[in-house]
Length: 167
Length: 373
Image (cartoon, rainbow over all chains, first blue to last red):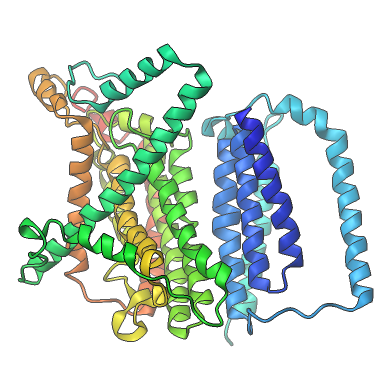
């Protein structure tokens, strides 16, 4: 019962602040609302018993990405000003893109929902298990994707240094 | 964990008595509800009380460093000074700033206090005295403590004041950089201990603290953790964000009353949290000093309650932090960032590799002298 209540509170927070994040006129407010959404998502992970994912969600998204977002916004020109409403054509394009995204995500979720309920039973993975599955080469172990992502990140860092370097 | 000696003064006796009494008369749901509320209330109360004690201790110790008396009017030796200050802060008006973002202005201090409260909950204060004991304890602590910086950044922006803004940006840069070092230093010890759970980590340090177990590597990690933890709390010599001569009070210039109180409390509590994490990870946490084979000695040490050990070790580290604060001049911003990115971080990365080698080749003290430690 308590879990149900907490779930509905978190779900309401995610839904309301997602809408607010999109409709807010000031970009810094959008960022703050997005932060609430990310925190509530972390709460969902905690509710499921995925402690590791919960901590990573907070450390990476709430503590890392959002801090960078806010930093970037503060360094831009006049972050407090109201954003002007876009042209009608752009609005329609944005709406269409959002619908396509929704349809895609809905499709994926709809076809995988049964698998999720099977997998969710195996909650509370220890850090040891996680380390082995991330850095192993057997079946259901993901060393190659892990390293590929790290190369991607390295490329991003090198690119950022190239752009930011003073001549 | 069970120590094999009698411990008449442990709080665990009280909590287990409470639990059995409640369970004998109520259903599971209500027992849990009551216990959750109790834990929450006790944690909040401890948060406030520890902050009051720290503020008094800081003012008194600072005064002795500067060869003056410190607070000595309210109560004997000024003992009630911080209580009087607290009442004053509670009674003050909360000033509303013109042309500022009201919502963010009010949300910012809450972020700060929630982040430090979440970290506070994970600290093991004594045997059986931790609210949560995740198997990813260390990761959890580094994750939630990083939320506080959002409060600082939002406060700086929403105050509509350029001093606040500069203070917030400096604080952000400083926190983001030093958080990295603190995290890596903790990771070094995770390699040594083989676990991220605080209770297992403390249990593993019964006869040999992590600080000594990994000798060279642990010492380096400990020093780096103390430096970066000190920098994370924005205290001198790293107090650029609120450098009083140039930025008035930095990011919390425009706050008054209880909102300022939130920042003030969070600052002191963060100092406590850094010290207590260092205690738990490096100095054996609440574990009494124990030596292999000295049974009488171990028995006497175990008579002292675990929370006394914990607070004693933490107090030593807090004193160290105050000592540093009043001994070194303030760094410039470029020196501060150089220290982190050009010295601490490379040393730290090499140190992790060194620790891995130590653990794999069996050169830790417990491996070298199995009977002794």
